Image (cartoon, rainbow, N blue to C red; front, top):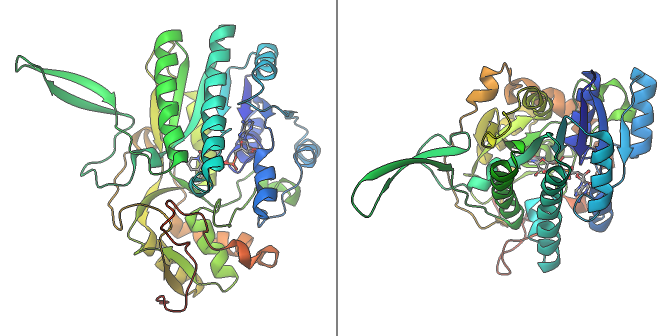
Length: 403
Ligand SMILES: NC(=O)c1ccc[n+]([C@@H]2O[C@H](COP(=O)([O-])OP(=O)(O)OC[C@H]3O[C@@H](n4cnc5c(N)ncnc54)[C@H](O)[C@@H]3O)[C@@H](O)[C@H]2O)c1
């Protein structure tokens, strides 16, 4: 029988290509989204570099091109408990994929209002989903998109494992007992803090109600298109380049395309984990196909394919495109330099063949950043959200080094 999947946040950057990929794989897909991301574009005066269509037009195009249908329900997962419950009771999905959170660290640090919104929205959506599944007694597998950022970026001195850390604890009588604990989080923004709190909600509902949960700790996503979104311009995925929502590599690609120096924060010594959007959708399909058993602990997988230092990334993009590199004030509160090693053994064992930066970068620059460069607004490039009131936004100033 056809498997049913509900995708919370299915209109977003990761959710939309995931919905198409799973529909193409014959899953019966329903998107739930409150379209808050499109409203935040209006609030910020920003828009996707790519000309994304309305949800309705995208879905019509998918049906016209492939003959397949994806359902859409406009529901706020954090606020409309009864509407979400009624939908899940009607559909009784095999899997719910949960992307429906405010996902930009800079946006979450903009003001007290943005902090409160991020906490209420993210924790509210996650808790509503778990509480509904428990109330309806559904044996639905929850696949959640978490982030590598929950672990912070201090040098751990070890490869970050997939979720759990074996520890030895010395008791008061001097004996040692062994335990496996959640790998400690060390969030660096309110957004990352909500993702750390999600982990405890999952741990509780897995233990108390036997809910099957896979939590994917994803790296920073780069790229725009997947096999399915490439089928027509009407299906094109969003490409954020503004200071709040643009992820670092996509910002560099777009900056290179419009002749703006690549803005590296601080020394650029921050090491981060990355994954291409095509691999994101493949990993999610693998996670859907390999659920944990009922009653098992939360399955935590690191969804990343490579790690790079930000200044090295800038230098790779600069080599491919000839763009200059500018070092600007870092608006974040974080270490200047860090190393990062992450285990991604499970996805590699399940057969993931990573799209590497080396192979994908030039195509991405030409297909997207150069093609749509004229749609950019230069005013949206600088990061203007800062972590504390004493910091300065990351604008390019004349006195700053441009290499
Ligand atoms: N993009 C990345 O680089 C990245 C990296 C690591 C983890 N993630 C995680 O993946 C998930 C998706 O990220 P994205 O880049 O696609 O973000 P996005 O903002 O493009 O998409 C999120 C979608 O969820 C919807 N949404 C938000 N709150 C909602 C609510 N209360 N009810 C219903 N819909 C709601 C938004 O309208 C949007 O369409 C996020 O949870 C994010 O934390 C993303």
